[in-house]
Image 1 (spheres, rainbow, N blue to C red):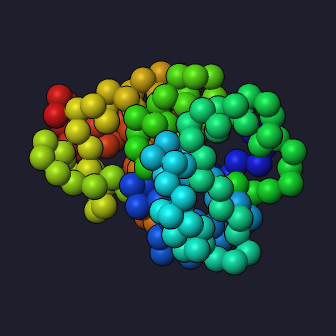
Image 2: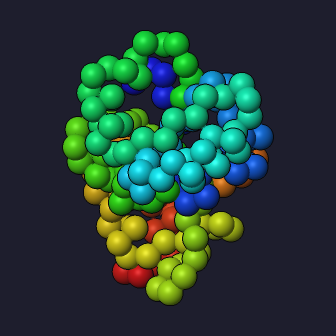
Length: 167
């Protein structure tokens, strides 16, 4: 999928770091948000569309629509540089389990909460996240944690070692 320049999991989706740093780093002309709930909510989808810079097209689609588009070769025409955003690891895993392949995935933002441990500032994981990431990694997908381009990438192995296993 040569159009896809960055696949990122970030529960905040479109926000300052995405539109000012990552978008520019990969020269994104398109942001694709893959989220079933947002795809059904026109009002919230419009908010994300308006949050993006005017030179970037935003598409909010369901998991199945993304899977169908990917399998149909829609992201292979070379017309756009796309940044693909997932709100959760589970959504990404479902897309991959349904035949979509990526070479690498960036974990950029996962909120804290009960039974979650901090990997780095802005990224917390729980046991289910680690299990899902290991399953994704087993499909030859490189996974790294990086909130901003200025930070050093943290590999999945180093992240798991940092938070301890089992969580």
